[in-house]
Every structure is written in C-alpha cells, then in structure tokens.
Image (tube, rainbow over all chains, first blue to last red; front, side):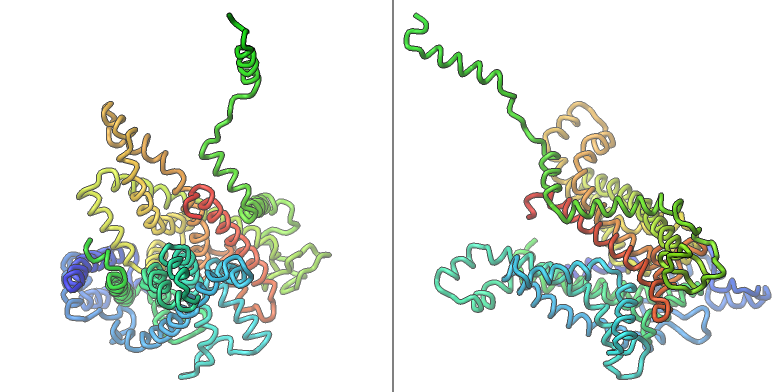
Amino acid sequence: MLSYAFRRVLSAIPIALIAVTICFFILRLAPGGPFDGERALPPTVLANLRAHYNLDQPLISQYFIYVGRLLQGDLGPSMVIDGFNVSDLIRIGFPFTLTMAMFAFVIATAIGILAGMVAAVNQNKWPDYVLVLAVMLGVVVPNFLMAALLQLWFGVYLRWVPAGGWVTGSLWHLILPVTVLAWPHAARISRLMRGSMIEVLGSNYVRTAKAKGLGQRLIMARHAIKPALLPVVSYLGPGLSYLLTGSLAVEQIFGLPGIGKYFVQAALNRDYGIVLGTTILYMFIILALNLIVDLIYAWLDPKVRYR
Amino acid sequence: MPGLTGKDQVLTAYAEKLEKLDPPKGRSLTQDAMRRLVRNKAAVVSIAVIVLIVLLAFIGPYFVPWGYSQVDWSNIRKPPNFEAGHYFGTDQNGRDMLARVLQGTQMSLIVAFVATVVSVSIGVVYGAVAGYFGGRVDAIMMRIVDVMYALPYILFVIILMVMFGRNPVLLFVGIGAIEWLTMARIVRGQTLSIKEKEFVEAARASGASSWKIIFRHIVPNLTGPVVIYATLTIPEIIIAESFLSYLGLGVQEPQTSLGTLISAGAPVAEVLPWMLLAPAVVLITLLLCLTYIGDGLRDALDPKDR
C-alpha cells in the first residue's frame, strides 16, 4: 500500500509540471496584454511596467522565473491591481469558496448515496421514478439556469429565502447557492449508486446471504454497501473538482465573495497573474483530489494495488 | 423401387414446401439496434421533439411577424400579446421574444453541431492513433490527455474566449477543442481491442499502411460508441456555450443564443418573467431530449449494458 501511494505521488509530479507549462504558454502566446487599456500609456511608463513584471525578458526566461517562484509557493502578482497578488486573492476568496463547496459536497454525497440505495431497493416502483426524474433535471439543467429559476420561485415569488447577496455568517443566504451546486452532484452520485447497488444485489454472495436468512438491513449494511460504493468513490474526486469550479459560476450569480467573482473579472482584464495563479491553484487541487481518490480506491479494492 | 414405402413422396412434398417458403431472414446488428431504439418510447418522442425544434428554429423565423433585431416602439416590455403578434412578449428594447428565442435556438444548435464535429474529429483521430500504435506513442499521447484533464475545464474555456476575442467561429472551435478528451479515451480503448482482430491482421499482411488500416478498417468499426458519445456531447456543448454567453463572453448582440437570452432575462425575471421563461423552457426541453436520445442509443447499441 505504502509503495503504491509513493508511486502515485511520484507520477503526479510530472503531470503537474507539464500542466503548469501548458497554462503559462497558452496565456502568454495569446494576443493582447494587461496594459492595453482604453487610454494608451506613455512609452516610458509602459517600459517600466513591463520591466517590473519581467515582461521585457524573453518568454523562456519569464517561464523559468515563474516556475522558480512557484516552487517557493509564490503564485505571482496581479498585473492590474497594484500590490495585490494571487496569495492575497486566495486568502480573501478561497475560504469562502472551499466552505461552500465542501458544504455542498457533504450534503450532496450523503443524499446521493441514500437516494441511490432507496431507488435500487425499490427498483421500478414510485420512489425509483421520482428519483429518476430528479436526477434527469439535476444532470440536464445548467447551474446558472437552475439558479435563476430557483431565485425567481423561492426568492421572489415565495420569499422563503434571500434571492442573492451575502451577509457574513448567514447560513440563510447559502441555501439557494448550495442547492444549485449540490443538486447535479447528488444526481450523478445517486445514479452511480443505484446502478452499482442493483448489480451487487443481484450477485451470488448477496443471494447466499439471503439464503442463510439474513434480513434486508443486515445484508445491505454488511455485504452490499462496500462493493457498491466503489464507482461512487471513483467519482468523488472529479465531483469535488466540478463543485469547486462550478462554484465560480454560482458565486458570480448569487454575488457571493469567493474566488469566482475575482477570476472572471481578472480574465476580462487580461490579468495574467491572477488568471494563471488561480488556474494553477485549481489544477493542483484537482490533481491532489484524484490522488486521494486513487488511494481510497486502492484501500477499498485490493486488486488495484498490485497492478 | 421408388415410392414403395411412401417415404420419398413425403420428402418431396416437404422439399417443395420448403422451396415455396421465403428464405429465413437474418437481422443485422443495426436492424436489431433500430428495433430496440424504436421500442424506447422516451427516445422516439425525444427524436420527434428535436426534429420539431430544429425545423422551428430554421424555418420559423420566416413566419414570425417580427425580426429578431426589429424594434416595436409601441410595445416595449410588454407581456405576450396576440393582437400585436408578440406571442412571447417583448424585451426592454421592444424586440419580439419569439423571434429572438428562435434565432437564439438556431445559434445554439449551430454552435453545438460545429463544436461536436470538431471534438469528434479530434477525439477519434487522436484516440485511434494512440491505440493503434501503442507502446511509447500511446503512453505519451494519453499522458497529454491526463494533463488536459487536470486543467479546470471552464477556466480554460474562459481563458480561450477572452484571449481570442468574441469571434463566434473561434467560439465553436474553442469549445470543440476542449470537449474531445473523453472521446479520445473511449476511442483508444475500443481501438486496443479492434486492432487485435483478424481482419486488421489480414490488412496488415496484405501490405496496407498504418494510416490506411486506421482510417479504413478501425475507424469505421468505432461508429457505435462514437455516435453514442457524440449525442451525449451535444448537450454538454450547449451548456458550455450558454454558460459562456451567460457570462457575456459568447455570442454578441444583436445576435443571440439561448444562454445570452437567459442571462438577459434572469435579472429582470421579477417584472418580465416571460423573458426568462421562454428561453429556459426551450433550453431545458432541448437538453432533456438530447440526453434521452443519447441514453436510448446507448441502450440500443450496447445491449449488455442494460
């Protein structure tokens, strides 16, 4: 197990490096720059600005400077807002984004697993049909549309919850955003759980357990849940990264103070520093999540370890 | 002596009867799949609805009394009004919502179609090449896919859009160029098993070049999974396009798409709900139907999955 974990960590490092390289060069090779404002800057100011951010050096040495700083944990400065750098942005925005995503993740995973199990046990009866409809809506309706419709219905017509905005520490304001984030995630998980549970319940060892007289609950708890969870576990990593990137849009829509608001603005301003730093941060998170999921998977399914 | 036991007569009669019968009919895999698809009611209804939406989006504008960018000064911010010919109401600029929804649907469908073609082409060629050559080529090519997977998809789209301007053609290509990863993985997996088949060996023995084997012998055999996955890619691309338009990065005024319409309608939904609901209903219907068709095709072409 330990050597498997070690191998997986080692293989993630080159992937991370190559991804950083791709991000860097795509951003730099694209036309347009952070200083093409509406008003042209005097040439000397422009030259000083470019020198300040090392933009006057050849691209390849810029790349090495960037990677060197990155290895020391410095994600780089903003090129539009003076004295502001990516770590400031992360300090301001990331706790909120992470809290909201984790909130949605825990709720959605729990609901998804439970709903999938209920649907599998009641296959082709009414709970199953209700669930299939909810899953279909969750998978199909894009989050910004779901947000708009929920805002209109629950926020404006029924006035049950605030339609948007943020008051520090108010869970009330999180209900709609978390619902919008969590629904698609719960839908995918319950679909996976339903499928694998139906398969497990039809397997020979579950039949044996039934034959020796175990009750439905005991069979589920002792024999069926662990193997049925395998596909769900392998989806958790990508799922959480969807939630984190999806929260960018949700924050934008509900006017919440996470990273999303700043990222979209930075992209529009061609603020290379912020865009590159945020993208790389997300990439590291996604890689780390995939790694953790692989390790959990190896723990659940011993066959994986020896490959 | 013939006919003594009557056995020959019986047999002759039987042979004649067999001759008159129609030859036994075999069913090809495609026919089998079609039968299964036709039996799937949700998929059939969805296909009908999609055909209707496509026809309306492309022919409808010629029958609507107002143009999509035409301003009706006497009817601004008005709810649906049948006498003036504004069946879905008008927006803040007095433009007819029905005409705009039709134009938006048309735009979303074109984006989806072009981007799907781009993503399928890249994915199939990439996956087939990686799978066929195998070894180190495969390892490097699939590692690149792993890397691309690690890049946060929506950030990547936003970056591309901002960097390359608001050109709709680039919008199609950019979205398509990002959606090919899963397709490449599926195609590679299929190629790995197809390249071990006897007909590929026969082609190789008769001296066909690698490229000819890939495009003549392997790619045609990938049709099933490619069609299924392409159908499931279309809704994803429609969502991506509408999300970009929602952020204001996609299709530009006076042209419109379903996402642009929703983003224009969402902030004013409290007072002008028809501006949100009309494009929302079309978008949800479109996405639901496409997903049902994709699921139906998968069940029909891949019976072991059911």
